[in-house]
Length: 426
Image 1: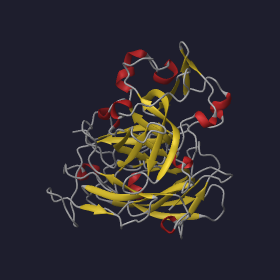
Image 2 (image 1 turned 135 degrees about the horizontal axis):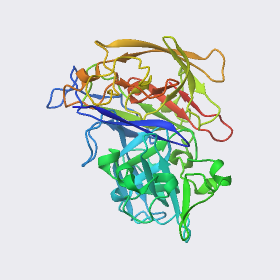
Image 3 (image 1 turned 90 degrees about the horizontal axis):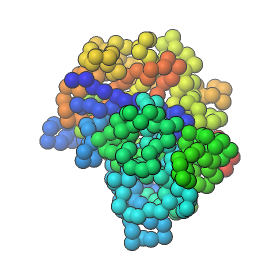
């Protein structure tokens, strides 16, 4: 059976995110489920700026997906606490900006962000798929056990509509009409989640570019036909954390280590703010600042004879991705008509990688990344969390530190705001 990962890029422009549809596996020690595969949890995190995240089975109707980090969000109609819903299985993505929910998963009635002038958002992915739907406003809350402690009021978010709904997506978003339905990430069977919580480094999903360029490929109106439009920063889809009253300068994701053979479930924490409380201090983490949140590179990456790669950390990627089809880092797994995108070394190897700051001389970090045989990992269907799953990225100049990099680490994502340059740290 072919194990598939799908390359999806979103964010302000084209930060990479991947979703892999798998028959997944696991094994090992620790507490276990009925299949004998361990469940692992991060140490308890306390505070009203904390909420749970989880790697495990997806929502009803989703395919089996490995290494997808889920959380919940509380969505209310603006200024109406009686018209609320907690939405589960929302994918946590540090590589994108904004909350994007499947319309089919949302019950509160949410009004258009620009009444009388309907605004639509298009998000295109590197695999050719896309999301299309109106921009609406909602009170979005997170934090604590009840998801009520930190609120972004009247936040512009995207509701992703079915490809059969009107208005039809703009050609610049969806391409030809022949395969629009197939390429639209408009339900859980395609997305593997009820939506995306983009907590990347940029406060808006397009920034100044969309304030001055009408045909920006991101925003449209339907007055009366679908036409590209400029959008003020305040009306663009926003990074929700940036709109909190406190703990709003970034996020920390803390996940436990997982056994080499995988885990059935990995429970961790999403902590809001950086250096704002005792539970989110940077401590001894290595900080990599960069100049532009729209670029791929968060730091330079080197491994083996490869140097100067554009490295980035992205919780929306379900593997470690590097190398290309023409120049893979390891042998591909044998199954699949096209060369399998997963790597299958004969036995687990340790890849020595060095990350170097783009802007601060002398700031480096050396890490050893285990790379396992993906076919061996997929031999059991009980596990969802893997720290050693890797595949090619299709470009020789990129290195994607996806969710496997998060296990056993504290990963910070610092926002570009109030004159602060964006950064990641671990």
